[in-house]
Length: 359
Image (cartoon, rainbow, N blue to C red; front, top):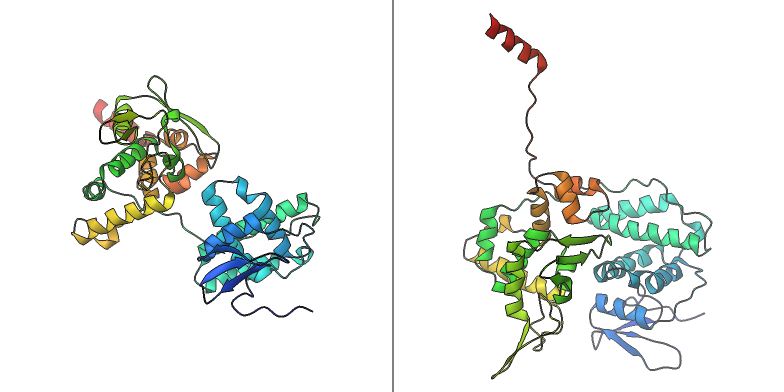
């Protein structure tokens, strides 16, 4: 029988260890030198599934989760994969030792209740969604005969209802660099997700046909017409990121990103989500520190997508613009504030008014 793992390592995947002295995570394999995985847990998990050999016999839930993170999750959007890696450590901690065939619906409810008591009811719903998906793949892989999760009632949650006003947006724009002002203008015009915004490049734009985007989350293919204000935004972005500048020359780039990384002097890499988050938070703090916004007025980048949907003339227009797979999502999550409707004149009242006129 092997030696019991230390307290610092007992909830980590097989082979992953934490070196307290160096404050670093490593992958320990038989007969090889330890592989450095990173200093943060999220970085360590991400690298672990790139190096570690996975036991595909799936004798435990730990094995099953490992297989999903190795085979399926990397094929999803980068943000989704990162979220899966983060959620998996909680699932491994609670379910890792179990036999997949022993998992029942009551275990799901116990987990949802436990995470609720820990103060993470919404996060628990996302973690359970991952667990449910993993069990569905377990059926496909022949590990179990049927998924144990049918009609599970998750923790209640309310869709975010923050509707950004024009005044609040104007207050933030004063503290944004020009590229971020253009980012906001483009997002309000298209309603694209941050993931898709940061991937936009010159190959997606055509002066005649407009902007073509395939949504990373739903796969929807959208083509935004080359209207004047959209062309103007992209023309200015080209002036910022479409050229390589030296002391003597300004050379146009064959391929350039709308929002390029400032860390890359050649502007050949897109801005990362972490880089964007840093710039966004800096602008938001500046707006709050100088009194243009109060802390309660803080809003997120994703609220701009909802603002675009809410300002559309109809649900159908918002549904098509946002590229949702289901119009119910548009109604429930992204149409915020009040919908403008025309009151109906009651027929009985109209008849009485007609009679009074005739009399």
